[in-house]
Length: 108
Length: 118
Image (tube, rainbow over all chains, first blue to last red; front, side, top):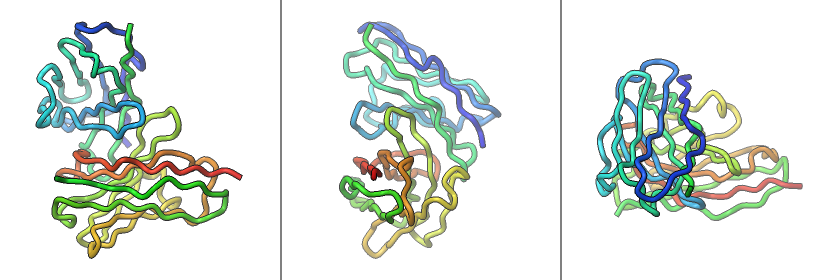
């Protein structure tokens, strides 16, 4: 299976900060990567697909970049509603989907 | 409006069987794969497997193959996740999710909490 490694596992930031989360794949996945946001007690929500395409309805402060094995999710100006856990997910291998371990964004 | 509505929380004893459900509405149920995702307490997301509701073709993560069964009844737009013999380590939140293009999870159910305890 393709392994997905996120860093950092926890991130402390303040409202208004620019935040970057990294996701690395154990082998090339082209641009077949999605990002999700999960708040406590809630189901995950799709934010970004195909590495950099913004899902409909998602604020433009969220952006994604990367290809191959290294990817980033950036929040340009952190808002109170953005404190959550973020997961990457590869779909290069359709029959073996895998998630990263998650990055928790906490209030500093 | 696309919705996936899951069955309610379950409390079971080790060795018991269980089937939980996920009912889709607001879209053509047979046009999208459905996946199940496990989240153990305080942990991350784990993909368990998926089913094509049009023909019930399934594939599983190696981590879950043989431990669970995924099925679907397209006549009632419902997918299922089933265990024949639960273990304490099956205690988790289980989500169903719709797969767009068989690849990314674009709609999720609200989750079903399964607690296995003697």
